[in-house]
Image 1 (spheres, helix red, strand yellow):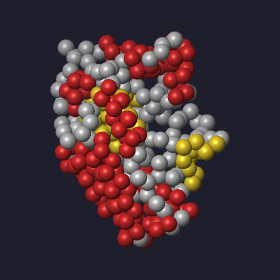
Image 2 (cartoon, rainbow, N blue to C red):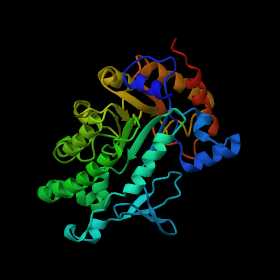
Image 3 (cartoon, helix red, strand yellow):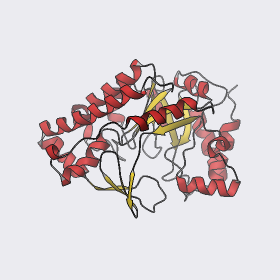
Image 4 (cartoon, helix red, strand yellow):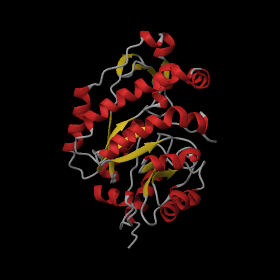
Length: 333
């Protein structure tokens, strides 16, 4: 499985297209109950696995505090992410806030687990809420966007401190044996970038480039997740060294055009809509969609078949099983 993913990233046509069906905890529990499987990843045949640098502290009820001190409220919407309700740099001034030290033991434990993984999957160290999202989790989205326009010095200082933390973390983990680093940082909305391309290039792009450079210097692959429409900076990301782009939302992108324009440079990871398609489709429609995606995106490698986001409990189990059946049996040779 691991080599199949690597070959896809290198734009080699493999006999099977690699796949990864990410699940929310609610859907995972239902799958286990209804299929009586004990190991969901093996049951689905997933080709990738990731260890998340996430260690939240339970505060009671549905509240948690993350590594940077942001407070999260777990919601009942079927997802596993929650919403930020407490922003440290609203509650305190910059000079009163203490940036966290690296949780070295935790980071090394994650890497040890990746090294000891015997499943044969492509292994990723995962840094989510990475850069822009980390900044807004500290300042609040509205405040950060206003800061970008009105307080250049303060905004650059904030991003510099976040980058310092992440580069130190990467120095610790990159000598371990795994294949790639998965950066999660949502920059897009349904139409274009949240902050626009100019502000992205001014505040976000330079730090992202430095993180990519460090990962690439150790011979590992860069996997970037961003929701939304990031076409305005796709060429920037290619130039910086991004290897894999997740996620491609078919509500946003013309998939044929995306493959034509960037298929030589990038591996696309995602493509089956969890927003509009999977909750409403029949199992047969899911099979047809899986075949369509493989035909459009899977030729000449450069594709990891996957839902656009983690599968939520409102999606019928038979829809997921139908997709997996197609990709497991779609032989290119």
